[in-house]
Amino acid sequence: MSSPVIDPRPLPGEPLSLDLLNTRWMTGDGPRDLLAEPDGLTVWLAANKLAGHCPQDAAAREALLAAREALAVAVRDPGAPSREALDGLNAVLAHGRVRRLIGPDGRPAEEVETDLPAWRAPWIAVNDYVELLAADPGRIRACAHDRCVLHFFDTSQNRRRRWCSMAVCGNRAKASRHHARTKEPRPE
Image (tube, rainbow, N blue to C red; front, side, top):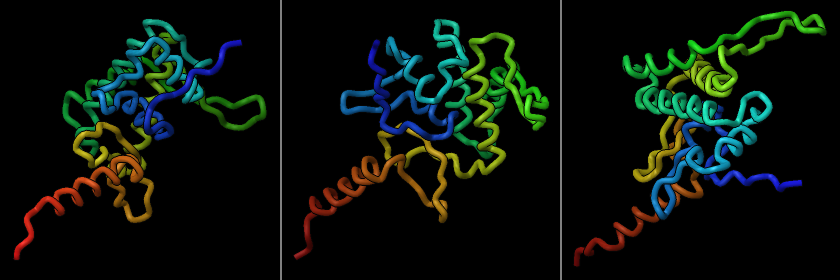
């Protein structure tokens, strides 16, 4: 029995679309890309409970990369997406749909259908972004730290969250401001 692969990302657990964006992040050694790593696709699918819903092959990886790129363009300005953003998102969404049905228990249900199995997880991720836009595009945010590339959905009551993590990027910003203040010459 093999041990589970550990998710190395600094901010897992955001809504699925933003979680896909957050498969790229910065480290002290430079940029890192989970989907470029040998087990990256497996790690991301498992972390998002999609492992049984999508193949783990080159086609699925390429489809996920296409969805991530479409999302990266779209989050630049979620309130007023560019033609490039719309085309990228709609290209992914064209691979699937939600089929409504009545489940075995007699209750309404939905099922995601895609033209190819490789597009299932990417379609679900981009559909999640559509749902975030419907909920409140102003809550889709990039971390305010100038070296951070992570995104989050601001669920704070006052809508003022600025950092992917106060413990990491927020503290870095505070430390940087403190360092700048202590380096300034004091008037005599």
